[in-house]
Image (tube, rainbow, N blue to C red; front, top):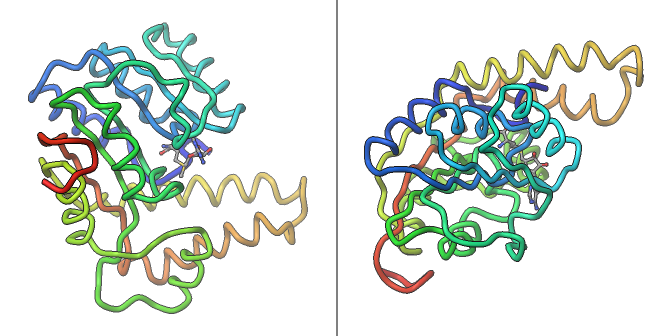
Length: 238
Ligand SMILES: C[S@@+](CC[C@H](N)C(=O)[O-])C[C@H]1O[C@@H](n2cnc3c(N)ncnc32)[C@H](O)[C@@H]1O
């Protein structure tokens, strides 16, 4: 797939421009970068050095190749884990995480990544939240199996404040970004069916995910949170 999670170049570009209007960006860290959908946009828009990290070698290789092909030599893609930060040196003006923080947990990401930010550094996270009071059991069961912890946008904002960040901007990822993501997924499923068989467990699971979005997608979405490190010791309530 072109992207490994819902999002779009336009959404990334708009936010990158917003952060650039707030402070000069010299170093950016993209956590769980996948094939680099966001890292490539960030490098094009900002001219900053972009360190992109993922624990899946084929994604890291794909990003490095795309960066070389485009002449974006300010991108460095490395293999690593979002919660084992020994390979990462120095601090960053911006840490970016599209759809990846949930893997180690939103609050854990806020705590672990805070020391990697400059004193006034920014953090962007997109993370799944419940949008309505009602959440269909089918959607809850499927998404919880995938490791999603359901809360709402207000919970996310309160957690950020408690962990030493101030909120700069928040919005819900546009529905079109989700529709484009699942259109790509559907095409890839069709492409793979003759090769691996229609009953391959991975294809069944992905088709189920698409169905859940089509039926219940209005009940959940990605909270997009741009925040800035606030004063005080790392991880201490402000
Ligand atoms: C939902 S995808 C999002 C990818 C990318 N940010 C995007 O929007 O296209 C999550 C990514 O996190 C990576 N990942 C999973 N566990 C990880 C870990 N512990 N450390 C680093 N990356 C991880 C996966 O390989 C995958 O590329």
